Amino acid sequence: MLPVYDSTMARYWIWSAGARERMTRALEGSPHGRIVPEEELRRLGIWFDDGRYGHLIFLLEPGGIIMPSDMGRIPFAGMHGYHPSEPTTEAVLLASVPILEKVDHITGIYDLVLNDLGLTSGGPQS
Image 1 (cartoon, rainbow, N blue to C red):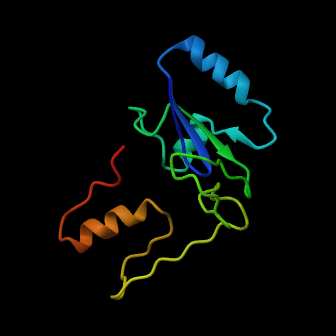
Image 2: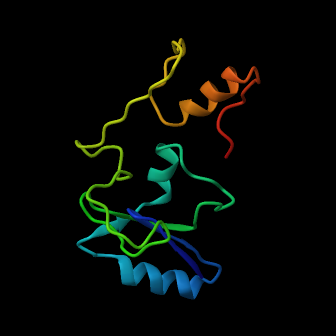
Image 3: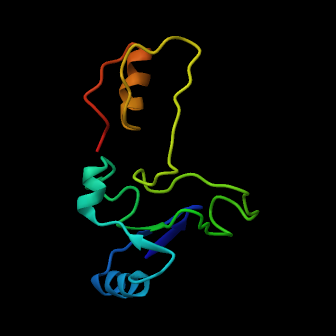
């Protein structure tokens, strides 16, 4: 198993069924966050069949921070990166030129950048 601790989530690459079962049991029922199921990751457009961003993702509740983490050792006064459905989750897209394409999801930035570079897009890579 390989863990990576971001500030608002823990991601685990797990190659053993036994290790996955033990990790799932350890994280289930935590008052600080939850394991994000595959169906939800798919619905959000952030599932990758090859597991490149982890096989198991534990997302913290808003306000929680993993510290120290692989993002740093100094606690922050505030944090982003919680679930998109949280009422306090807002985003803004700023640019130095007008943006003609509608971007209503973070995955739309992929197409926006490719279009800006004059490249074609088949959508976000998954």
